[in-house]
Length: 182
Image (tube, rainbow, N blue to C red; front, side, top):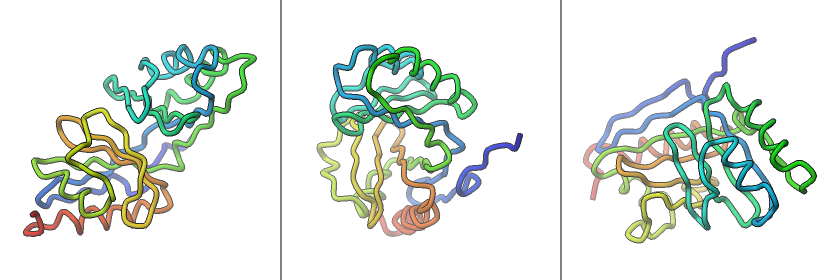
């Protein structure tokens, strides 16, 4: 079996903020209506995290569960554990209408860190960053591509499609150029 490879093989940039690609990361898209019997147990079994509230992400170390839409959750976990997590979801949601798909190789994940990390994304996304709270997941766009991101005490995590990873890295590095902070 071959080893997983991230989209940009761990690309990094240091400007007024630090940008780095994380990967490979295990990711599952789970589609199920809120209130579905077994949904909370499925998310807990797959990630160890609680069911996220509206526009929130629950993070436990390298595992997370994020609310993406009224019937969609993004589950993040170590890449090697995706198959076991899918089995756990299937068992917890047995007999319930749902869809759980491994999207690990279809996504790219970036970290934006530093005291002015928000300025990198302020230039690229139509979000009121003054209102964005730690643990709030925002599904939006970064320039012209779909993205989701959330803040924590150290910065931001951004998820996008793998097919646009190089473009997004270019956007982030350009936005973080020394001398361009406001």
